[in-house]
Amino acid sequence: MKSILIKNAKVITEDDVYRSDLLVEGEKIAGIKKNIGVKADRIIDAEGLYLIPGGIDAHTHMELPLGQICSSDSFVSGSRAALFGGTTTIIDFANQTRGETLASAIKLWEQKSAQIYADFRFHVSVVQADRQTLDEVSQLQKIKKINSFKTFLAYNNMRLNKDELLQVMKRVKEEDGIVLVHCENGDKINQLIHVAKIQKKISPLDHAQARPPEAEVEAVEEVIGLCQQTLCRTYIVHVSTHSALLRLKDAKNQGLPIFAETCPQYLLFDESVYHGEFDKAASFVMSPPIRTQEHVTGLWRELLAGAVDVVATDHCPFMLEQKRLGKSDFTLIPNGAAGVEHRLEILFSEGVIKRGLSLSAWVSLISSNPAKIFGLYPRKGTINVGADADLVLFDPQARHTITKNLHHMNCDRSIYEGIEVVGKCRTVFLRGQTVVDNERFMAEKPFGKWIGY
Ligand code: URP
Ligand code: ZN
Ligand code: ZN
Image (cartoon, rainbow, N blue to C red; front, side, top):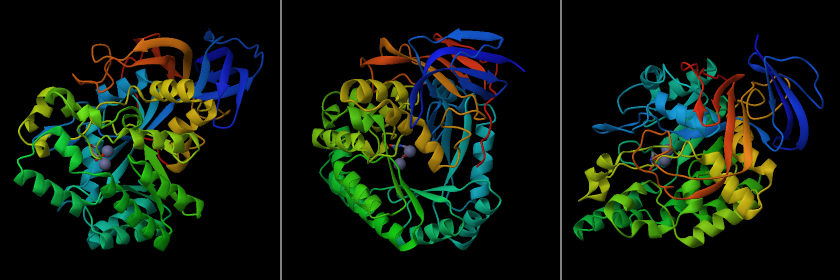
């Protein structure tokens, strides 16, 4: 069994910051205390570095099929990029196709992820609420295969109506799983897209205007009502508006089991990204869209006050050529952007350094909270004896500039192009193996593992 001794690190967990040595034996953390004196296969002096638990990205879309195309990262390339950015576990979405079973979606995603560098799990997207699908929702939880179910209130080929969502939530509540919801009012959006088309509005900016903040807020209000009714654990993905986040904060304060996720793109950019040339603006076409500066400021304020539970990426990369499919019709621009590699560093730089987010809150948002919410904790998401040795040695001083020319995601675009960040993942360990060391990828082959709950 290989051992690694990390000396003099500043250990950061969700509730503590302290100096210590840490011993890894095999795949696990074997000891945490000052001045560990044992011999080890590798000894690292971590003076000046932070030691944090590996990141958990609870929202990725590798190889997501969209009509004739697919998001451009495979599980291999996307998980490799994730490790470069300190994310050691991803939770991807196995999407049901209408008319097919959840089992067939899971099988397909298992095939896609047969080779993967990071540890992983799936949520399953439920796009119909017929009896067979609902029975599968129950069964998947009973056999402890999957307990997180994604639903959509927008996207015509995937969305559920209110009653269908209620049925899913009731089934999930029975087994104490969790429902994830893409909150946008699909009827409102369809109507606005219809009008835009009549008016020959075709640009990325028109995409954003057809998906206004109210569409998100109305959907969030509806889901809060269903959460109240069912008491089903509920997780709102990619919250993009200040107003929706305030509704969720109130709901949580009333004791509802509801969680809010946001993503770096909603914290960094405002709607001005949609002005200007198509190629650049199309990189930001995603749903929900990037919002005005008031929302950005409001999201930060609430995040700093603790209203956000998780920062995930919604990593869903498309190449420029794929984005250009919608050059003369925004509804044909594939939605999504690459981000899985940058989440830890961006939140550190923009949150901790620029806005005073505490180190423990940073770790909670990127690792401990998703681990707790999705049942990976305390195996993952913290630094404790017995936990998986998924660890990141993080240099809080290093500066670098994000560019598509240097990132590891399989995407010829970066919405973060030219952004300078403070802080860099220096060395990354997955279950005790060094997978990234000073910009070098060290894993000889993909050894990512399915992590049950
Ligand atoms: O635009 C986005 N977010 N694409 C990925 C699918 C989704 O809605 O999460
Ligand atoms: Zn979504
Ligand atoms: Zn998504």
